Amino acid sequence: MDFILAGFIEAIRLLFSGDDQTWSAVGATLKASSGSMAASLTIGVPLGFALGYFQFPAKRQLRLLVDTALALPTVFIGLVVYAFISNRGPLGEMGLLFTLTGIAIGQTILALPVVIALSATAVESMDRHLRALLISLGASRRQLLFSSLWEVRYGVLAAGLTAYGRVMTEVGISMMVGGNIKWHTRTITTAIALETGKGMFSTGIALGLVLIAIAFGVNVCLSFLRKK
Amino acid sequence: MTVSQPIYRIENLVHRYNSDPVLAVDRLDIEPASIMGLVGPNGSGKSTLLKLMAFIFRPTQGRILFDGKSALPFDSSVRFLVTLLTQDPYLMKRTVFKNIAYGLKVRGNRENWTRPVHDALAMVGLDPDIFAHRQWDQLSGGEAQRVALAARLVLKPRVLLLDEPTASVDAASSELIRAASLRARSEWGTTLVIASHDREWLYDVCDEVIHLFKGTPTGAGRSNMVFGPWVPEENGLYSKLIGDGIRFTVSAPPNADATAFIDPAVIRILNSGEASTAENITFVDGTVIRIASEKQSGNLFADVRAGSLTLVVRVDESHLAAMTLHRGWPVTLAYRPDSIRWL
Picture 1 (cartoon, chains in turn purple, yellow):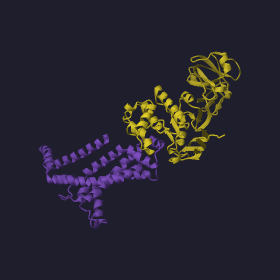
Picture 2: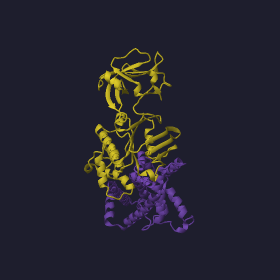
Picture 3: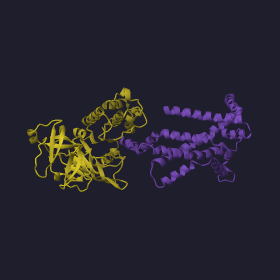
Picture 4: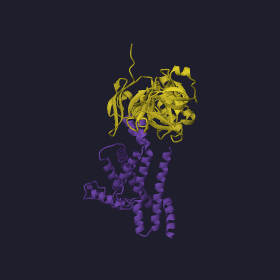
């Protein structure tokens, strides 16, 4: 049990002593996850809105596909992205393998189904009277779309937070696509895997606590925004 | 001499949900600055007609002319002129002020919204200083209904469509909604179309009341509808139990669940116990609960409670000379079962 307590003490020391390796991993994690969240929200929210709002042929089949993609294993995504961006892959020339951009691409694929499915659910649960209200107050088609989206903002926010949670905590993509290169593509989760493999449990726990602290900070910021 | 053009002309309108027809109106004209009421049981098509008139969706068939021109949802000719208050008022997830100002915002109105929003709140009896900055979820049902009405009144619409505006509010809110609606007509010449189950409220407010039944207008003015099921009696007539030992008797209905339509003019009101033995006349005892005169015709009507039914009876002056008629007075109603129409 001592190593768990030691982990907590080590976590506080790592965070407040400005440990270079820890802060490098934090930086890599934040860069990759910010890129993937920006991409998945930009693509996923409009797609999720369209999936929940409009009626079109094959809507149910498409929804089934998105829901299935929620369960995509991170190692499988890592494997597919690796295959595409490795030297022998179709995107090999872009030099994305073992880069944070490569990790962000994989994480975008991981987050996208979460953002689409949860945004679509938020839109589907929108009050059926909203459309009548907006049209009867004089909204144009464009105003109808944007006002409807604004009405489901808390649902979309929840979709983003859930996706962010998945992206921050995944190991498979970061490990396979990023290669866990020190000072470069080592994220908090790959660092935890490495430290645990080396038997350095307390460092692993410390890094885990850092991860939770970041997630907590993000949630506090969003909850502040929600109140506003 | 110029003849005013109806603000609405509905022609050969049919609307279906999936393939089920819910509304069929051959022709309906509504005059500008008039107040028209719609009555009918649940599922009679009132809300659908109002939504079509608000251009929220397009009819399956037929057309709706607004100011003489055929109009469809989002048309610029109607978008800023017609507004609907739905039965369950929905408020957007924002403050009362922003809810009311939304219609001004979509109209591109860049002026200061404080004055019109506060005026609209005052019009529905809500203190702007208390309510303007409340969130949508900090209101009671009656307050939410009045805020929703204020969001329409702030637009000074040419047409205000109200779907069951008093269904879920107390008497005081109902009176405030009534007063605000009437003020809209007197101040801005707004045309009102109001659907309600509250017949008395409608008869008080409206210039004309149309009856809808199974999606079709069945008549105008005061009338009685009695729903089945009907059970056969020994004398070839049918009846429905409407109270403790009280039966409402009718001629043979087309089916056991048919709806009887009784013109108030075919029911005669008599002093209690004045039943005669005349053939083909049926009697039912009741109590006068209200006497009112019709707005346009000036005709006098009595509402008589008989068991669980309230029947409207037209009272002509010869009746009045022969009897005392006031609220709470016991009376006997006489009618010929074969004078009943079936819907």
